Image (cartoon, rainbow, N blue to C red; front, side):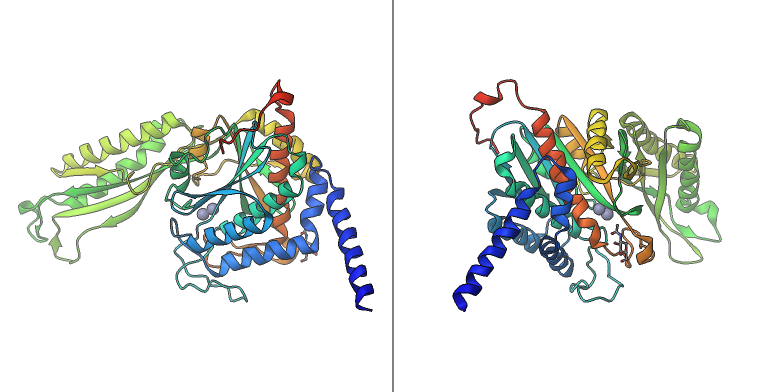
Length: 437
Ligand SMILES: *[C@@H]1O[C@H](CO)[C@@H](O)[C@H](O)[C@H]1NC(C)=O
Ligand SMILES: [Zn+2]
Ligand SMILES: [Zn+2]
């Protein structure tokens, strides 16, 4: 009896294995079907939920990084670690050129999750409120598919698990640590609350804004509120500074070149009848073109200093780029846009590959844009109206539609594999495997 049961199980495993291998690597729709298989989904959803329960902030993703490495070990995929404290770079394929990279970010946000569910964050005040838990699960899924087809790969795929996307510039540190040396092309994705499930969306050119922060201390001379002539009032000066800053975009920027200057911090004083010595203001500025970004930065400093001087105050401006590095704009290579549209159409049909408006949010994927010859960033839809409304990213009610996972998995794997196939070196037959990754 037992022997028969054993044989039966072996037969089932063989049948399952045959089904697994049925999809060729160069078949985006086939890879999507593979990623949707129940066992594959269960594994991936399990990984995502484990990460969701234990969210870690930027540069503290120790348990997440450990989980990633254990899953890679289980798949027999080699990796290097650490990059930028917790980062992991795994490789699948020949070890030789061409070299393509895929990226996932691992960090959570310092916020409290408000949704009650079985796998709610177990860490008070920390939450995967942007979906990076899903990104890690997806990239492990892509790794698994690529590993299943490793003999078909015509080059090397590097899988980057990076720390600290949310303001920490983890990508910048990954680049500085050498994680993208030799990489010719790189793809990044984000799950999107506003894009329908099954849809892939992006655009050629700028897709996410460049972003910087500033803080200024405006100093006068404090004193009694009833004797303003004995004081130099920094509250009035700071108020005029803020109004003047609002004229940078409305009067100096090309109306067709979207930009933002927002003052989000205004601190100073504390009593109704005291004029304080100084006031601190701070904010952020955004632009899609590097020149516009640099122009804004220069003018913000000039306006703060000179406008403060109108009310006899002095001002010191700090762009905080030691702690909060400027994020360059994320610019999609136009040639890769056509490539994305072609591969995406084969996977989800041409009607489900859509043009996306650029977003004023910033993404540290832009550091790869600056370091890698060709990069492309796109969105994977999560919105399924039959399941009800989808709370936005960074909301305490944010949730992941786990049905989205296979789309990201299959698209990243397909983009990487197809790119290698279409970009064989002229002497492909003679290339010796190199050990550069
Ligand atoms: C949308 O949600 C419904 C209800 O949960 C589900 O039956 C359907 O398969 C979902 N659609 C997609 C594309 O995942
Ligand atoms: Zn975010
Ligand atoms: Zn994010």
